[in-house]
Every structure is written in structure tokens, then in C-alpha cells.
Image 1 (tube, rainbow, N blue to C red):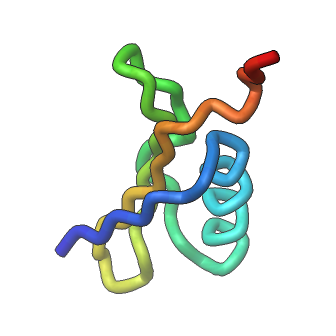
Image 2 (image 1 turned 30 degrees about the horizontal axis):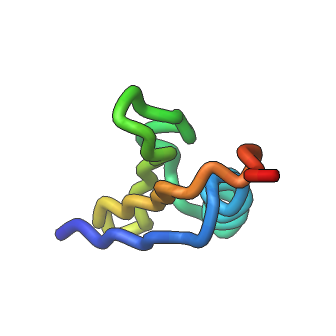
Length: 64
């Protein structure tokens, strides 16, 4: 089974990745900004389910 969680922005991907790792999830794919603009990571829960955490909102980019 795979679950996907879309979080509000890039920094939230990193925050949630660390939070679930600290809670016992196993890292599968560390947070990475892909060439198509999504920041994405994967973890596995204790039962082996794959969990994707992603965002398409780069919070480091600000429009003036």
C-alpha cells in the first residue's frame, strides 16, 4: 500500500520527513526537489507501507 500526503510547501516536506523518522518510520528516499518542481520524499511505516510526502510550492520563492 502507498499513501501520499501533499503538504503546503517545500519546508514542510523536510519537517514532516524528520517528524515521521523520529516517530519510527524508515527513510526510503530523502527529501529531494525533482526537476519537474515537486519536493518529494518517501518513508516506510513499521508495517512496510510506503508513504510519500510532497509539495509543489517552493516557499523560498517570493513574488514582489
